[in-house]
Length: 151
Image (cartoon, rainbow, N blue to C red; front, side, top):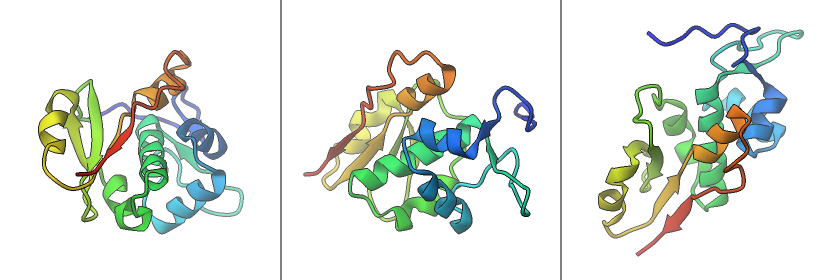
């Protein structure tokens, strides 16, 4: 079982801050939450005074969905797949890969070459930049290391 994050925990991230860290607009975050694609795992923010509180894995998913959309992937097709990913068991150095068809996989960085060697388009998201922003280091905040490849 993973760590429990409460709304007052240091890893609890407000909706506006989650959008900023994920490099998306708050409007995108709000729409994706209402679609049920990436829901806040700490506090759902139900009701008028409620506010959404996200955890770090949620922010990674938001950033990945935003990246896939900017790369030309169909966010409507990938939203549910990204939202359902379990990245808590991911290796330390992992990437999120979509080869189309509405599927997204967590892939160890060392396995990436084999995954993208098949013909077709692959969308790859490296979460290291958003993880660095969340950690406050900022050392790689401008390095997306994310690519699109097509054959």
